[in-house]
Structures are given as C-alpha cells and as structure tokens.
Length: 334
Ligand code: NCD
Image (cartoon, rainbow, N blue to C red):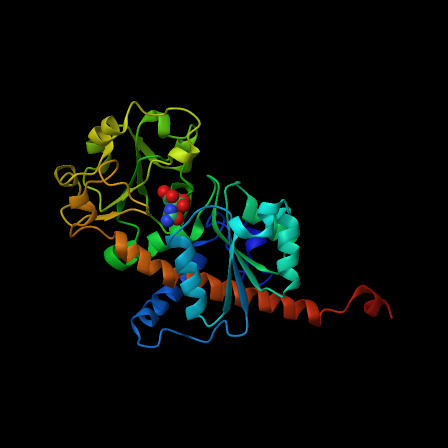
C-alpha cells in the first residue's frame, strides 16, 4: 500500500491511508498544514500552489464537512475545482465508475478527491484506472479516511503537543468506523502508546487487539485520566442488524456527559469527526462546552486538505517529469 502512495523518491503522490507511511511523512503533512492554518486567517485566503491545476471532487456518498472543506482547500490553493453531483451525473444513468473516470481524465484533470461506499475504491482507482492523476481518499467504506485522521492529529498536536505522553480514548462504534482505523494507525506512527478503544463488544472488531491498543467495555474505566476523548457516531447506515438494545441504553452506557467527562484529565479535550448526534453519543453541554474541539477540527480540516493536495500534486509533477526525461525502450536501443 505505501509504495503506491509514494514516488520513487519517497514523495507523496496519492493519499489513500496513513497506514504504511512513516513518522517523518506524517509529521511533514502536519507541519505543512500548520503553515496553512494562517492562510485561513488572512484577508485574502489564497496561495497560488495549484494554479492552473484541475481538481475534481467525486463524492459517491453523502458528505457535508468533508466535501465542502476539500472544495474550499482546493480553491484556497487557486485550483480550478469541479464538484460532480453524482445524483445528477451520468453514473446514475448506468455509466460505470471506470467510464466516468476515463471521461474526467480526458478533460485533463490533475487530481480526484474520491469518497465511495466500497472499501478499497480509492486504492483501485489509483492503481488501476488513473495512476497519473493524484488520488486523495475522502473515505472508502469502512476502510480508511486519511484526511479526517490527519486533521484529528493536527488538532491533538496543536492543543496537546507531543503524542508520546498522551492517553487517547476512542469511544463508540469502532466496528463500522473508517475514521477510528486511520486514527489508530496515525497515533501509533506518531508515537502515542496509550490508545484505548471504548464501546460495547458488539461494536468492537474481532482482531483489534493486534493493532496494539487496549479495549474497554466500561466507559469510566476507558476514559479514566485520558488527555483526549474522541467520540464516534453510531454508523447505523452500515449496520446490517441490531447491534444495540436502544439509543437510550447506548447513551446511558457510552454517552459523553459533563459528569462522565470529569473522569478524564481536567484539561482533556473532546473531539468528534461529525456529524454529531446530540443525546445519543454526546450531551449538548459537552459538544458546545469549553473542552470541545469539534468546530476547531472542521477549520483544521481545510489546512490538512490543502497540505495533502499540494504535497500530492508536487509528487505527481515530479513523477511526470521523471517519466518524460526517461528514454523509451526504442530510443535506448538505437
Ligand atoms: C465521518 C465519515 O464520513 O466517515 N465523518 C466525516 O467525514 N466528517 C464519520 C461519520 O460519518 O460518522
């Protein structure tokens, strides 16, 4: 997986998952994003890094935050941006994904931002369909959501500093969450050693212990003394059958309330990728409270997306130039 994301010189050319990327690369993404946070505070919120490049937002699954922050990020990098509404596009007339992509490629697109309900969709496109177009995974099935995981890492680093001494609890529907999976990979690579997964057994993947995390069915035990509490939404759209007795029972056992948050460190931060379900996984007083980072996460999402888009574009450019410079077989034989 990692080789597919990197050029022969080790630069990022696609961003599909943090899995397999080393600490240096993840830190470079965070450092680059840090430098873009200020762009959002400027009066003119633009830098020319992607000027003349065409970015296509391809969302085959619903999204509000991710889609709009990708679009804003591309615009702040001065790219030409096309956001395809799949519901009104030819894909809904039966055109295959491959044909849609080939047509978009013919329009000289440089980058596709892909969200798809099938795990592995972005990887497949990067490998098989358009290797010369930078592919950024905006969430594929239950598999990966790398820019969400990295914006979460940026939030943690900016508010808590180094990852090594931190205790981080991820609470809720781990089983169906592409976010949790990538958060674990990123946290581990960045040096965090106390990662706790909290939730009912029915929402905990079977082989999760092999990822070097601890699991807890008791919420108070799981969040005791932690620096960061990451809450997850119940992904009911991915549940084939009933995994829980009721939403009320879930909130009683795993909902984050002001009272329960006292078990974590006094200065702990609370995060959630959104969309939040008030009264199901999180109490309003916590979501809107002083420890909540939920809206900061959305702002940092723009900076992270600007970072990975500019890094992947520069990797793709380097690779294209290297290919042009290489003699073809026939030329070499002459
Ligand atoms: C997440 C997603 O789509 O996986 N949300 C997001 O990208 N903002 C998590 C979720 O849907 O619960």
